[in-house]
Length: 340
Image (cartoon, rainbow, N blue to C red; front, side, top):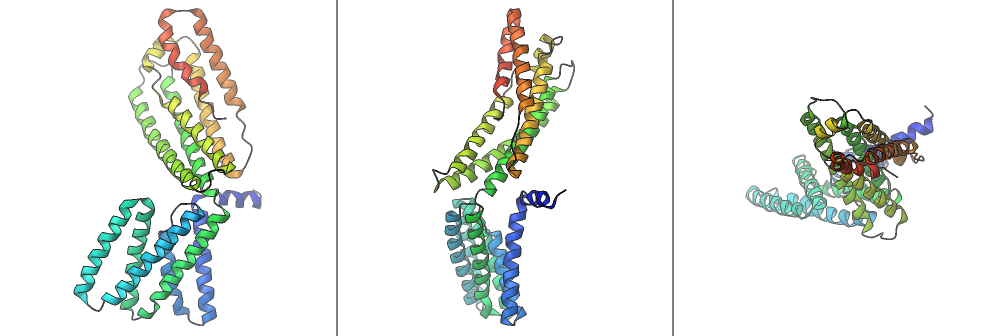
């Protein structure tokens, strides 16, 4: 595999960018400690970087900058309160209880603040560790490490703001592809199969698709708050709505599947439904890869499967059997479950 393709695939991994930011922050802290001639400075700097990394929020660079300011204020308050109250155990216990309650209430505002609150609690523990080791004067280094990682995070988000959205949409289409590949089992024209077990498996995958859709929606809308006219974000929003529409149509209960099996057991329409859904699922998975690797997307095979299904449904309609009419209508919903 060419090195450029390997690096591109590495770049598509969710945790790669996060790991690279932490590596850059650690490297900067090591360099600073080396230039200062005091290796012991690494410990509080590293602890501050870790706390800041755990408090990182998914947002646009403006939102992440605002979150960084709130994070540093919480960190500073927690760090210095721990330092001031630690010599008085009773006051420290009361302060710890009040601060914990305050952070819990802060986390109740939203996921962003919940992340900041958990990071603040972690930094409070780090502050107590520093005090126990008689290096209370290095509380400022904790904040320096946190601010250093926060600055890297803001700059990174400004330079690569679309990458998380792209990865999120790829997860949506990968989960949707798995769903569409499972769905054809319900149309299998075999009598006596365990339809309920297949419904359960499909329901589990539906939950994964819904979770991926919700995460992608929140991520896109957070970035649209300050960039309404962004063409790329609007494009991702359109791709999101296409995925949502495909899932809604494909997840609908088309009819009692046993009735479809009995009515069309000797007809090819159920095989056409299976082939279409399978091709749609493969197309969604291919689209997920295309989004990550910036490759062109082609869906000719699914288009051919869709044309074959239309011809099969039209053939059934032309036969004009009255008992088939209520069964044919639900199958028409599959005609438009195609990613474009």
